[in-house]
Image 1 (cartoon, rainbow, N blue to C red):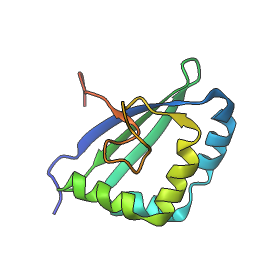
Image 2 (cartoon, rainbow, N blue to C red; image 1 turned 30 degrees about the vertical axis):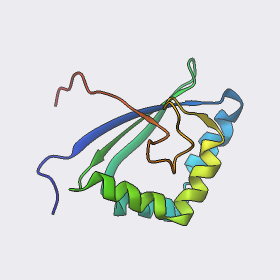
Image 3 (cartoon, rainbow, N blue to C red; image 1 turned 90 degrees about the vertical axis):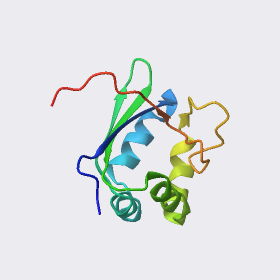
Image 4 (cartoon, one colour; image 1 turned 180 degrees about the horizontal axis):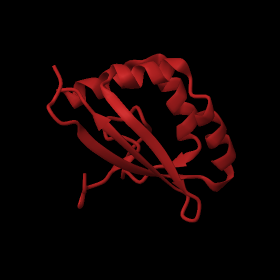
Length: 119
C-alpha cells in the first residue's frame, strides 16, 4: 500500500573539491544493486545536483511507501549499498552533527525543510 501523495525529500551534503570528477564518474555508472535497493525502498524521482561554487550536493526524491524508517533500515542493511556509501562518503563532508557515515541512523545527508512548492 502506498501513500496517496508521495513524501518529497530534499537533502544536502558537501562534496570535497578534489573528488568532484570521481563522484560524477561513479554516479554515471551506479551499481545495479544500489539502484534496485533504492526502488525497493519506495524511492522514486531521485536526483542529485552539484553547486560547484559551494561544492554542495543537493538531492531530491519522492518516498512512496508507508514506513520510511523501516525502508531506510532495509537500505542500510544491504551490503552493496553499504559498500557504495563507504566509497561515496569518503568523497563528502557531512553537515549532520555527530554523524559517523551513511550507515548512521542520524543520516549523512542533512534534510531540508520545504518552504515553498508550486505544482
